[in-house]
Image (cartoon, rainbow, N blue to C red; front, top):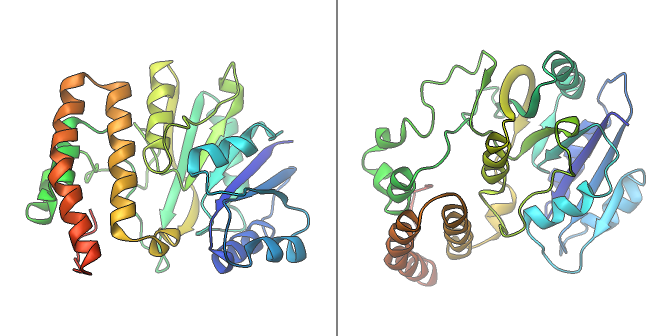
Length: 286
């Protein structure tokens, strides 16, 4: 088996159906398998999968296990030389998979790779990031970029050229292809993260062991951007973000960085709770 595609889904039946329809229209010269891990959806996702896509390897969870643990369930069963973690709100082109595999055959030293992500209008979505530091994450926690957007230019790689291939720190987890040959053991995500920072953590671990993370323009994929998040209130999403951020800095950085971020989050999470409770809307997205 050349490629295993893993999709973690939660209450996005329509997007998931579009995603799978696009996958099975792909033109490839190799075998691939598809896993869908359903995190206890309340919609008709599971029924739709059983009726319309019986060829999918379906894993039905009785609870929402989060992104990392759900992906790992399928990774342990995957037979592909390459594993693609693909969000359900991604739409691949007919040549996306073939182009990615062709690229990997010429760049076999790459452990992880992401492709060129575009929006519905065909515009490039910036998604290459540097590894987070306590400084840039503190700015995010305190919402400073809403006043001074350029303060995150370095972290967000505002100067990155998406028309060229390059070694990078990390790529978006929505399209995250892993070359299993470059791992001595099964490449699993750290299950301490429920949501957010899983892919950054994985890329960090790859770099620590001397591996390479790449962005390539050889393939394109349309990213409909965060359809699942619309179902969750702002307090819950911010809590997920806080918990994952603190776990990441506890794992990879010194105690001082962790404490700074921990203390910064205390008043902010309270403010978010009040905003959510009293339905105070904000245009802020950081």
